[in-house]
Length: 232
Image 1 (cartoon, rainbow, N blue to C red):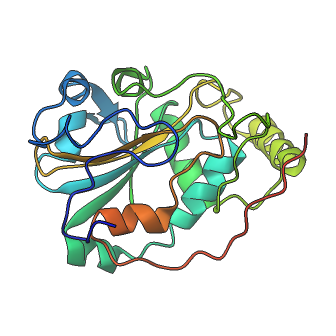
Image 2 (tube, rainbow, N blue to C red):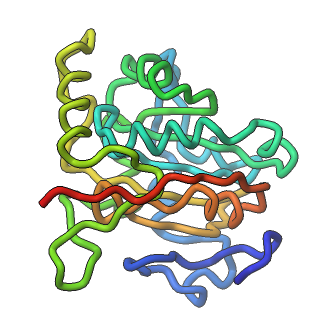
């Protein structure tokens, strides 16, 4: 296990694609360079280049599927529990990126209690250039079932009902992002140093938040949620 001060230069889980050898200089990776100039918007519609998020300091960047996804909502609810003081002490930014209109950001933050940085990649350019998956793939060998996330509290049926209800009652009735798009997690910076990348294979394939904090050198907090029983 790497110490907090040692960069984690490979992915974990089942889709390891960047090895430590690939990132030995931890400076220039073609996927990051392709994504660096892509434009994001904040909750006010102001544009930023993707590289602005990690140019000055290390950043934990979470890409969510869409703002109506119940697993994303419940994951971000736990991200909201990370104290700002922990991030400030480690000099690390915590950022969520969605792929809907920026007009949905405020409502998503209201229902999740999320108070850290958040942006949208409405055209999914960063998602695409970083190789984030589309469609859902099982991560359980031969079982056909999806792996559970320690941050998801709802099962498939109740979670889906909640998502549909939020879609119906939303001020703007849309999917708030491409439903087939999967998310992921990236630790990068300052500058172009990539420390960690995980591309989610399905809606439950989240990196545990405590692991992300540890890999970025941030003090961790406990999360006690059990993995959900999935309906098949």
